[in-house]
Image 1: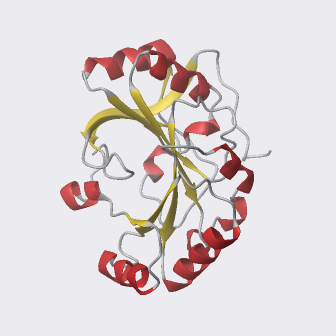
Image 2 (image 1 turned 180 degrees about the vertical axis):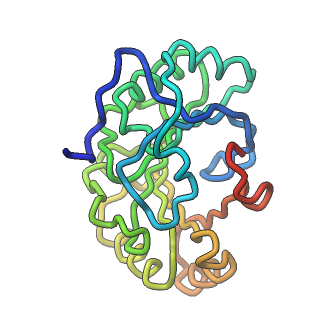
Amino acid sequence: MDTSQPTASDAGTLRITEIFLSIQGESTRVGRPTVFVRTTGCPLRCVYCDTAYAFSGGQLMSIDAVIEQVQEFDVPRVTLTGGEPLAQYGAFELLTRLCDANLEVSLETSGAMDVACVDTRVMKVLDIKTPGSGEVKRNLWSNLEHLHGPDQVKFVICGRADYEWSRARISEVQINGDVEILFSPSHGAVEARELAEWILEDTLNVRLQVQLHKYLWGDVPGR
């Protein structure tokens, strides 16, 4: 079975782990109240994954029901996350319909799933897998062709080797100049200050990103 492709589901449904309101902890929208829709299932197994509880289980929900629950929070921003959202075909329809509802929509997705059909109104945060993730071979580099404007590319740094690898990749691959590049220290593996010093030493044109939600609530699920 090709686990890099979305899985089919009943028309108009998605398997959902949780829908909750929190403070956006990452991306250029950090610090803003945001509704998170966490889908169930992921074909990757990154060593630093902090949402393994979303690998299985969940509840099958209609897209209508998901949107209704999102709107009950009365917050204009929503993030589709996982798991891996694009592992379910219904994610594409959900993203479009959330945009149609006049919400600010963002997507957190691995670099392993094809983003070509994601609604262009969605802000994509594409997580390029570093060697330290254990999933570096899964990166679909053609995804970079489909990034624009507010989209972002994230590298989770697990050590100095990951930093050097990521620095080399942003020099070698073609990334739209409008797309911001995020370097995020792997929680518990690299200190944010240490990564900041590396970035400053190389005057690297990237944004240091810490996971604000981890500083606020630790590893509490649903926050």
